[in-house]
Length: 161
Image (cartoon, rainbow, N blue to C red; front, side, top):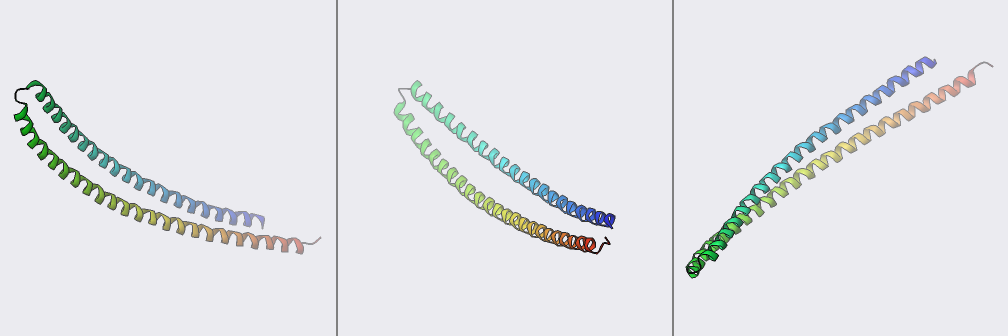
């Protein structure tokens, strides 16, 4: 009789262990999904780095204009007017780029926010489901344990002395 109990309990523990393995596999899948999200963020960072390089190029252009002012003092008024026009055009273009970038970042942020909200809801649902399933298994194990305890007490009481 004790051997049957051990075999039964071994079977039940193996089932529980298999279920934990399934949960571990699910967590590994979620880790892979997060890695994909990290890659997307790295892509966005690369895009921002490209924009930074463009801004650095614009800054270098402004530095070159400043050097020309120092080198060509006689033509300062003409160069000022000319560069004033260029600066206004660049400012307008810069505002357009900044507005476009801001719009892109806001849209991307909203999309990413929605994506992560959805993923977090999925994770919460998965956690709740796993928790409920594990809770049900725990209750079943406790009930089985209680039944076994009662059987053992009955056997001990009915054992001839």
